[in-house]
Every structure is written in C-alpha cells, then in structure tokens.
Image 1 (spheres, rainbow, N blue to C red):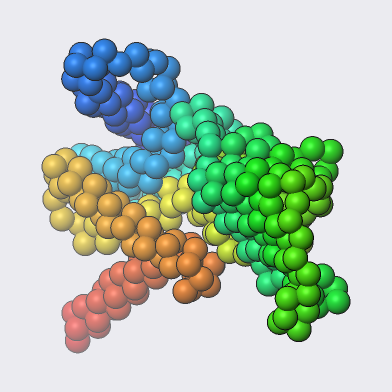
Image 2: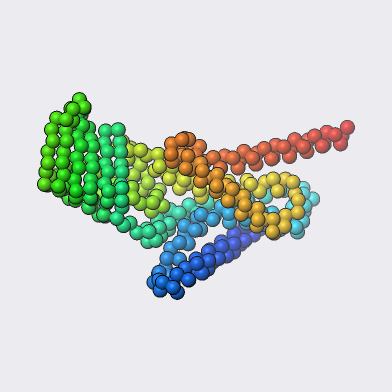
Amino acid sequence: MVRKRYLLKEFFTVWFLVTLGFLALFVVIQILTDLPQKIQMRSSRQWESYWWQLPLTFVEISPILTLLTGLFLLAEMMKNGEIRVLELGGLFPFLIYDMLLLSGLVTAGVAFLVNEQLVPSAYTRLRPLKALTQVHLSAPSFLFYTERFVPPAYVENLQVSYSLSDGNWYTLTAKQGWFQSGFWLLRNGQLWGFEAGRLKEEIVFKQTRIQLPVTPDLLTFSGQSFPCNSLKQLLLWRSKFSALGFSKIPISVSIQERIAYPALCFFIIFASIPFFLWRGHLTRFFVLSFSFLFSFGCYFVYSISISLARSGRVPVFWGVWLVHGTLVFLAAVCVIVHSWKGIFFFSRTVR
C-alpha cells in the first residue's frame, strides 16, 4: 500500500508540474506570436481568448503529458535503483505498471471531463458562429443547398429537391427564405414537378410557404465544429440525422473520438513497456525527445485513420481505435518476446 501511494503521489506531482509548464509555455508563445500584430495593426484582441484556448490545448497534449510523466518516473526509479530494490525485496517490479495504468486511467478521465465540460463553451467563445456559405445536406430522397445561411433563420439562393411517396420529384429554387413557425417562407423562386422523368408542372412565385425536414438548428449544427457540442448533443444529432436519412458517419466518428482521444492517456502508457523490459539508461533528454517524437507519430497515424473513417473508407471503429489497438499489440509482443528470451536463456544456463 505504501508503494502504491508513493507511485501515485510521484506520478501526479510530476504530471501536474509538467501540465502547468506546457500550458504556460503555450500561452507565452501565443502572446509573443500575436505581439507584432498588436503593435503594427493596433489589434484589440481580447486577452480572454488565451484563457479559452487552454481547455482544448490541454486535451490535445494530454497523451504527451502522460507518456512524458510515465517515462520520467521510470527513468528516475531506474536511476535511483528503486526497481532493483523491489527485485531484491522479492517483489515483481512489473507490478508498478498497475499504478502507472491506473494513473493513465485517471488522466484519461480528467481529459474526458475537460473535453466534455469546458471545451464546448470555450470553443464557442473562440469561434462564434457567423454566416455560413455553401451549406449542403443530402439524403436518398432529399437534397438541400443554400449559398448563404445567416443564423438564426435566413437563407439566400436556396435549392431544394425532394421526392414524395408517389415517386414524383420536385425541384425548388428561391432567392431568399426565412424560417418561421415550422415553415420556410420563400421569395422570388420557381418550382418544377417531374413525373417519370418528364416535366409535369412549372410554377413561378413571388412568395410561398413550404415545410421541409431541414430546420435552422440543423443548418447551425452542420456549420459548427464538432468540439462545440457535448457527447450528449452529438448522440442526439446522430439520431436526428439518421431519422432524416442524412449521412451520420462524421458524427459517429466524432462520438467515438470523444472517448478515444482522452483514452490515449491510458493506452499510451503501454509505449513505455519496452524501456522497462530492456532497461537501458534513460536520460532526461531521451525521455523528453522520445515522448515528443512518439506522441507526434501516434497523432499523425491517428489523424490519418480518423480522416479515412470520416470519408467512409474504413469502418468507424477501426479508424478511431487503430492507434489504441496498435499500442496494446506492440506492448504484448514486447512482453512475449522478453519472456521467451528469458526462458531460452534460463534453459541454456541449466544445460
């Protein structure tokens, strides 16, 4: 119990200091980057914007911070001979990983809570929704396109195509439109009706009212970045998109990513297992450089797999959780190879 409390205390002490250091460094770099623009252009950018960037920055760098902390703790224990003391005391030193994995699980929980509770409001303040251009939504029997959408309920140059239960298609265009009381009020447009691929009717109107499945809140959501929404909101929007027949793959990816990215704080601990099994001399410079290089490599692969999942080229689950599974697989291979070498060496010694 003393050993566990000691490891947890050491881990979170280092993790807390490293987190504060990296966030402070980020703020300083941002201020120095914006300073020339403030001086030359007399920009009046609010200082609060730096504060609102911190939650998203923390979530993005949380796997790096966790790996850096874990490797630093292992390096210090090897340097001070603490792992050797555990071996001499009859304890299996690999048991320290139960505390490292527990620490990674806690940091993953913290990153998830920050991403869920603080990031949506901070992201909304940093990037308030403005007029959207070229908004497009499509389903097998419905297509909606507008060149400009101004929240909360105004559209310009609207084009809509939809199919009714009788199989006939209708295409509608309008110069302007407003949403009011569940209906779209459209002005200066035309309506074409098609039956069996042939033009059945054509109507020119100055003003008309029509009910469409697309509402302003749906257009607002499609124009927002997914970080602006909580996990609960994303689940709600996925059900709405599914009911309307729209593609829900990007939302499904974002829903799983809300859990998968903070979970990297837990899974990235497995990346330190090879350095524990083959105990070389871990210097602080190596810990720092390897943490950055390995984390950026993971982020590069993670970004590619997420893009492939969003485009529908790979299943959502495999695209989101590829890096996690790879880390566990490589750690398992290292443990098996190390165990096999130990058995082989022991058998040769006995002979």
